[in-house]
Length: 599
Ligand SMILES: Cc1cc2nc3c(=O)[nH]c(=O)nc-3n(C[C@H](O)[C@H](O)[C@H](O)COP(=O)(O)O)c2cc1C
Ligand code: SF4
Image 1 (cartoon, rainbow, N blue to C red):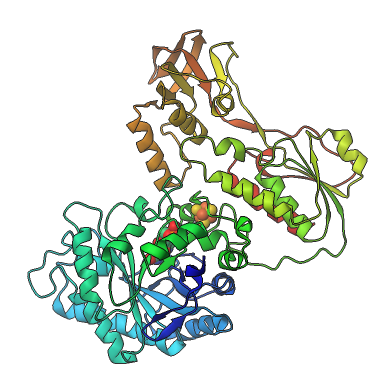
Image 2 (cartoon, rainbow, N blue to C red):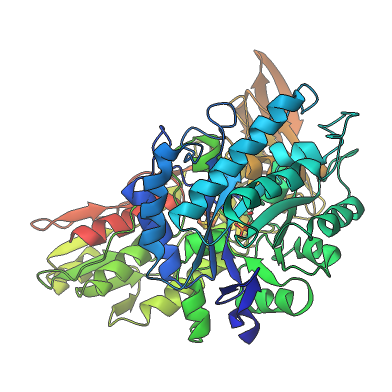
């Protein structure tokens, strides 16, 4: 792993290691573009974790036309200088170099053809002003957002630029921005670029062109992050199934250059990171990797690899930022959006925790960290995570189970591997009990033997089907994922009462899953209700009409209901996770954390 910790220079600025925290919008700024204390704490936490180069998120260089997101920080006027100065000062005590991503959203649909020459120079001036604000505020460098279909990318790509003047598709706009920043800050102030080296869209920048663009920009820019352009969003905010480091080849292809080239995307494990550094890139961007675990680098350096809380790709952060436009949150790191200090409890209490799923495990971790006497009852370590990891391409969920199993070993937790009875808890005479007892599948139809099966039996492989016609009842996330597994060997249909399947899922992950189902020929019947069933057939109703479906099995995925087997009188009972309301990993982990910091 020593590759990760080798220093590198970006135009004479020494970066202490090869890791970059790339720009990642948090929505922690205010809607007027000013920074908040949470914004500062979020970045401070990543700097404390020892990342070599920390790049603050998309920041608006021209307001309001170039604004990209409701809570995008602004760096378009001197009004914001004090905010950024405070930001840089707050990071000074750490060994991270600092940068900020200068962004103009541009006009993805319209393209840049309509811009007058005068307007183009005005925008370039805005980049220059933003660079100057950053430089004076004390940043070590700035980064130009030249990817993701935003303005600089729009100038580079033939898809959005059909101009026949000197501003036609090519590097001129990017080069003039660089010169304007140099004019104001001097050439020694480094400017890097997040570059679309492949648009991943027909008619756009191809990797061959991307290589030429990178080559041409190396005289002006000081580091390139090899990224994706105008193409599908799910390629640059990749969902869980994407393999680690899958797009590091983009960096490899544009090398060698006389400036460093960084790889980005799904780099989660240190040996993958080291391998990329050995053969494909000079630096690595660790985005969600450091959201999920800001201490990733410290743990790698100290050889505590098993303690890393690896981003599982659950896309909760993307859902918050892109679907809801709210502050980001992390499915597995409940400190995101808080960054509070976990203090020892004033009084050591005996806490019984019933349930070894994500809610119970997180509660145990935090309660033990705070010095409580923790008793954890579980029949299966990991609880529902053991089911959630079973559908195709969900194996990264095992990482979370592994993390808790390693993490809980650090504390003196009394582990009771058994299904807790009320008497077991009473015998302990605890001060409080946390019931994280999960949920049970719902079965709102007759349990016809040899015809009706529960989704969990199928996921666990307790029942197996091959070359059968299967109806999955219920098209929620669980139903769709169960269908995805079954469709590997069977003809599958999903019957869902609502107008859509997989509702509530993050948009890009949902798109990916639906494409998988389509690819495997899964038939999706929405607005459809099962009205009757008998062995071998189902009657369904759609738009007031009834149809018969012949099937070899019905797999019930109609959802689950909270399961709370008992309560303990006379002491506080806290019900968390699915036992409180069936939701997802984020809610479970978050509630485990929340209750344990209050005890
Ligand atoms: C919630 C979220 C917000 C992001 N915001 C930005 C951004 O402001 N600017 C940017 O260039 N990329 C942004 N990205 C992309 C990341 O910088 C990074 O390229 C991407 O997440 C892939 O790397 P990772 O797998 O290490 O997270 C964002 C990604 C996520 C998940
Ligand atoms: S929310 Fe999910 S995808 Fe985002 S950083 Fe956390 S674990 Fe990774």
